[in-house]
Length: 191
Image 1: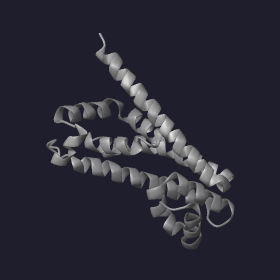
Image 2: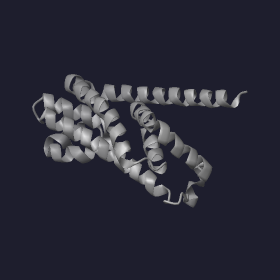
Image 3: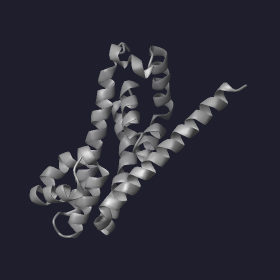
């Protein structure tokens, strides 16, 4: 969305106030830049850490809420969702998965980064309770955000390169998860 120089200039000029919406939208790269700016004395590292954690949770709650709003309380699907092949029985199966494995699914979604939005939407569609969602999501957000704060604080001058690595690792993890999922489905279907 923003190039690194623009992002850095915006955070330097507006400080922590602008960090909140930027961290909600851009996440890891904003965390890297903000932590680096904290090391350089432009921002307070404690405030940066708290803001990026809270912003990440706000963004995740927005996805969860959007997923929840997609499905009526009676389980009716909007007509335009038909292209996803989500049917009431599949939605029921999804809800069962989140009832039994919701915590693991959320942590996996957060760690793969690229699957995160889909998992967060699915949690909302499955009507995962808000408290449970927040508990597991916070447990996954804390180490992830702290990792990016530490990485940015120590190696923020390599933010562009790190962002490329994060994107590549996220895509590789997504591919690994999808491959594992397909193999699991295939194994379940074979006699």
